[in-house]
Image (cartoon, rainbow, N blue to C red; front, side, top):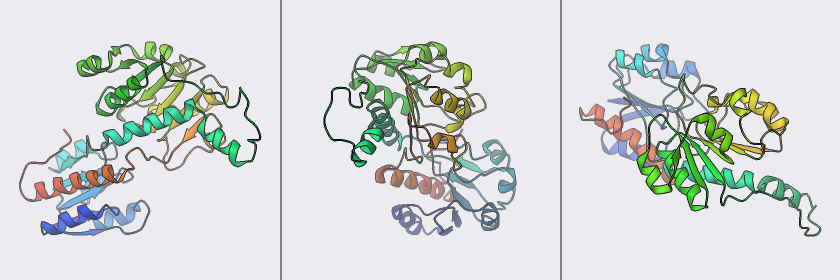
Amino acid sequence: MKVYITRKIPQKAIEYLKENNISFSLYKKDRPIPRKELLKNIKNVDAVLSLLTDKIDAKVIDAMNKCKVIANFAVGYDNIDVKYAKTKNIIVTNTPEVLTDSTADLTMALVLTCARRLPEAEEFLRAGKYTHWKPDLLLGVELKDKVFGVIGAGRIGKAVAIRAKSFGCKIIYFSHSRNSFLERKTNAQKVSLNFLLKSSNFVSIHLPSTKKTFHLIDKERLSLMKRSSILINTARGEIIDEKELIKTLKAKRILAAGLDVFENELNINPELLKLENVVLLPHIGSATQKARTNMAMIAVKNIVAVLSGKKTITPVS
């Protein structure tokens, strides 16, 4: 059995493949694999361990002559044509749950960074401008008693809401289905998306990338937000119409934004880089040693299970 890995992964996962007598090869360069290289290397392999940066479309799937499973090193799987893979009897798996806490922690880090203007404060100090304390120096926003709106009440959205509640926030959420656990845990109220945007001091996005969520936060919905509100996105960049967000931030129609994801990764809109009221991170929501190791282990365990004729751990339905 042969496995192709499109990027270096934690060593623990490599050792697991070896222990199960699975041979493998991997793309060793520290960058996303070029499409030509991917197409060449996936021929005659039994499994592929892919990353979000790998576009696994129909052409790539057709090049997989023997492939039985595509194990995506991510919770999301919008980089894979899952329906087409199914027609070829290829199982697609992902890595849910293991990055919930890491992403929720980072979300709250962005909330606090934006609210307390930490990048501005550090730059101010490093530039030698801190010569004396004054009452109105870099005034920020407190979380206590603020309305915290969560868009998407899945695992990560729920974890973020619980964290925000611990800061004294009132929780409201938008979701297609009611989350009774979240309501019991945080006394959250399920509301419409427009009501959430109008009412919230903080808005945090936790939705998958689908046709329905593409540009869900568009010009019209951005205009509903308070001038004092902060928008956070650690989900998928294309959920926000980025050009309209830039216009909104430039006009200071919202207070700030914190982004870990972008509409055109890895080509960040240069206009975002010029803005002082936005905090930008390089997609590090799951970037903890524990989360990334667990993601890799789930991916390789799914591969070993399929190649051994056993049930997968986390198949994409």
